[in-house]
Image 1 (cartoon, rainbow, N blue to C red):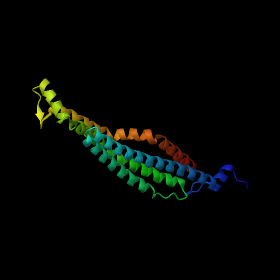
Image 2 (image 1 turned 180 degrees about the vertical axis):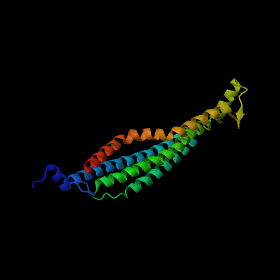
Image 3 (image 1 turned 90 degrees about the horizontal axis):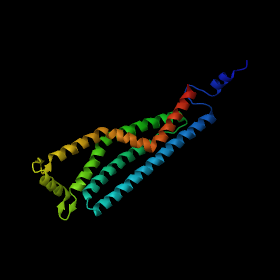
Image 4 (image 1 turned 135 degrees about the horizontal axis):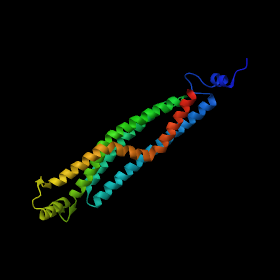
Length: 218
């Protein structure tokens, strides 16, 4: 009895634990590897650019008289790079194997872990970066006097009743605390917005590829 096209497809291409026919399976394997390799290249380039920028900022901050800002900025970015480099190294342990669907699933799990880790870091990273700017300009030496001291003196001249805490206007402390709180609260969202700009197209292609494979497997 002749088999219908549907039966031929099911018997010859689809299996319970495999993907599809060898040629199609190989095609999806190549697509999977291409997407992930592209992501890894972009990820490495971004880490290199962050390192280069942190060193450049550190040098520039020294010459413009705000070394505190440059040092905090440099250390923060360096810690961020080290954490993400370790995450990238763990990606190398994913077994490409012969099943592109399983490969994509493991990569997708890695992406979720990487995003979750960086979202948590962002709640501290952005406030620290903001503080580095505050400290940098506050302790900037301008003709033997810190800019922070000059600013306080001007405030006291215009507003002599200003309440000070450790020599700092209370209103200034309140404003800084509010900004730090907002950065901590929205840090994760800022990171997601940033990562979507850089890797959004790759993530979209990954979702489309997984949807195609799942459709063929169903």
